Image (cartoon, rainbow, N blue to C red; front, side, top):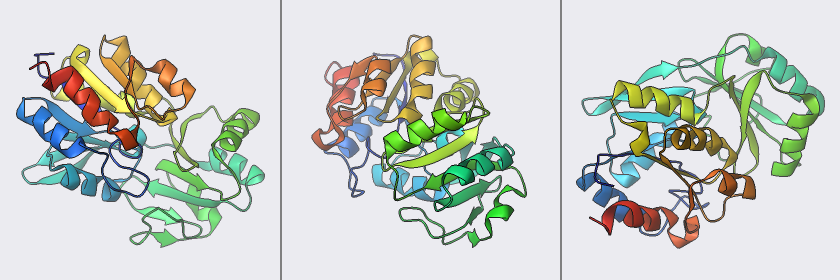
Length: 268
């Protein structure tokens, strides 16, 4: 590809390994893609506080960044980023349905301004700047996301649960360490990237999106529907691999570096 591309990277299981270290070769490959004139950004389920360190790890400053599975988009202003676009919904019904089935789970919501409210501490989630509240207070106002973590349930359990309770009034994604992440209906990484492509005047046909989880299916569909390229990591579930244009190596094998070289660098 010679035209300037919009390259959107998932984070967990794509850019970084489970222990938080970078996938082999990813930093150098991203630097090379940026040096070649392409826009490399992140499209992640993480909140901004957990997304910003990955920008620093990769040493990139894209104009827009997708967090919270597409519910929040940040825009660069000088050397800083501002919360530019946020989608919200009323979480009451979703929380009630989930609580009936998962009474012992840990629950968290993220408010429009980024504040987090949570019922109990949650491993792997930054709640230091949040507030612990009773469960009932989680639905007191509209939120940009709901996160559910249950140590007794894995990814397949969550998938069956969603099907059983018919949670179809919101969008959901299951994280690679088995948490349930719920966003406003019709909102995902793909809807956020659509906005970014319009704001920054990118041709969606020149988009390359790379991820490994079910929360990447939205951006896969968006990119492929515009003749862009969706890349699944090698360790991705069958459903994700089937939705991709290309399957690269696993995150442990440097899948992002491999595909960036294949698409942009080795041919340049």
